[in-house]
Image 1 (spheres, rainbow, N blue to C red):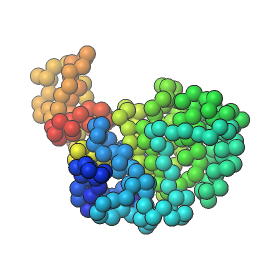
Image 2: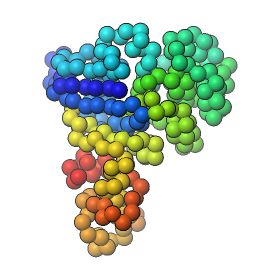
Image 3: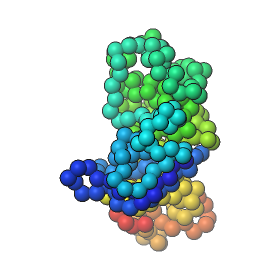
Image 4: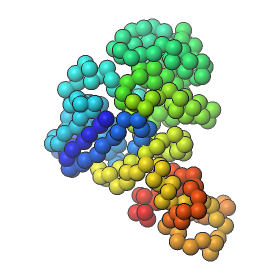
Amino acid sequence: MIKIEKLTFHYKKRNPIFNNLSLEFENGRIVGLLGKNGAGKSTLLNLIAGLLEPNKGNIHVNGFVPFGRKPDFLSDIYVVPEEFSFPHINISVYVKAFNVFYPNFDHQKLEAIFQEFELNPESHLNKLSHGQRKKFLIAFALATNCKVLVLDEPTNGLDIPSKSQFRKILVSSVSEEQLVIISTHQVKDIDTIIDKIVVLDEGEIIFSETTEAISQQLNFETISSLNDLDGILYKEKCPLGYRVVTQAKGQYESSIDLELLFNAIISKSI
């Protein structure tokens, strides 16, 4: 569990990115952390990981203060960053060297994910494509079985089949005791796997809701004409007419169009 209370943070000689921010992430969820460029998503993830220290306020991750960087904290959180580099070794050597830092590391799970991702353990990491290296890092992260997994733009560099594999593997690999936070601009890549949506804008949480509650409150559909529907909260022109968000009327629950929802939230239409 992550609990953030009255957090204030700013880089030197800059205006605050966060000012009195409070937020909770519960275990057993796959959370989509969304926001425009510059909203503060990467900074928030770095604060959670203990790579930055708050100016004011408190952050607790599984009972630890992240910036203390205690071994028991570090062994139960894994961050897949957007940008990364590897030493000049092959996959099997990397796994042997680094799995020891994670007491719940599951070699069988790793082998199964390697098969799904078509990764050869004897491949040299720096001779793989960017997408293959990203898949290896995701596989290693999932095999650690850390209670908190932070994935920053995990689908960047993945082709369409690999994105489908990623969704399938993630859902089948995490347990109810784990918390997964996915920060991304590629919202369509995660719309079927997240169960909570948090939107950050200009250092503030402007939306935080479970997908179950969203499905009960809002409908997402495509219509040929705006005259075909009353009570439209948000609309976007599309080749077939309009993509719209309306208030749910209880007849049925529609699938969430995450990109449409995000645009509606940012425009303050809902």
